[in-house]
Each structure stands twice: as structure tokens, then as C-alpha cells.
Length: 172
Image (cartoon, rainbow, N blue to C red; front, side, top):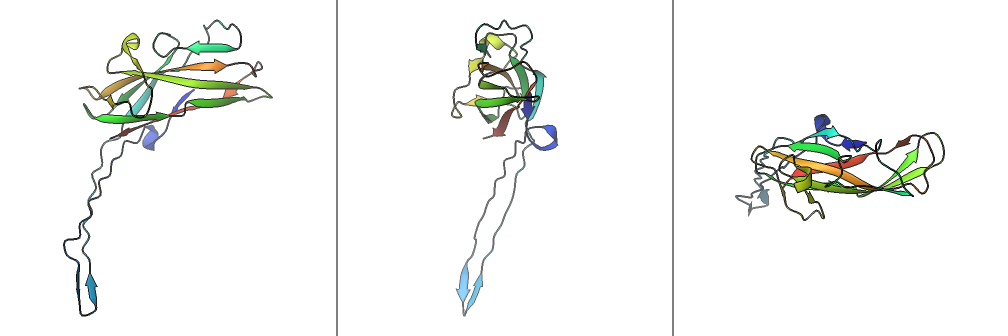
């Protein structure tokens, strides 16, 4: 399950620039005065749409591991982020997740992998490595995000599992 976080069901891309100036700090005969000017610039939020979830229905399971490549596997999840054209953004997500069985003992361990590209071209996407990777929305204000995972089934039992993938996007 891919889940997004933010206000109004979207990802919050909020940049507040507080400008604080002290034009005059004067002190005379026991009087102190300070003038503070504050302004804020609010950018539109980054909208994140899930186009498809990771689909394991057609995957062949051999052993205790399933690998869904975000670059090569058509079963990878796909999201589309929309915001300001050519804006630089930061992408963060939890790489590791434990999913618990809803109806008894059992757990899945997931190690997420994410790739991104400025167009809807999964095979051309680049694996996202660290928070320091520069990401930029394209000239239409979009970036495509594919989500894959290495899934460990060694402690899994048949049943339903719950967990969520949380991704956050913000303007830089």
C-alpha cells in the first residue's frame, strides 16, 4: 500500500521564509524598543497521485525473497508528483518497513527502492540513493516516482498484512 502524507490529502510543499529585521534597537533613559518585521511566502503544495500500487499478484515466489525492481519491473508502484515547474525538491521515505499480519502471527519485512524520472519512462529512471540526490520537477512541474521493494517472506504466514509506505516531498 502506498500512502502519502500532507494537508488536504496531498503532500505539503510549504516553504516559509521568515525575514526578521531589527531596523532600530534603541535604548535611552530606561526605554527599550525593538521593531520586528515578519513576512511569509507560501508555495503551492506538491500534489502526489498514486497511479498504481506495487502488484505482487503475478510475481513468482521462489524461496523467501521477492524483488520488485523500481526500474525494470512492471509490478513496481508508480506515483506522479506535480508542483512548480523546474522546482528543486527533496524526497524522503522510510526505507525499511515491517508489515504485520492482521489475523494472527506473521510478518513481512520490506526494504523499499525508489527510482525517479522527469517523464513516464520507467526504464530510463534513476535509482534514488540518498536525500542528497538532486531532484527537480520537469518544465511541466512533474516528476514520476517508481516504488519497488525487496520483500522478505521468511516469517510470513498466509493471510492479510497491513503497512504503509510513506513518502514526503518538499521544495528546497
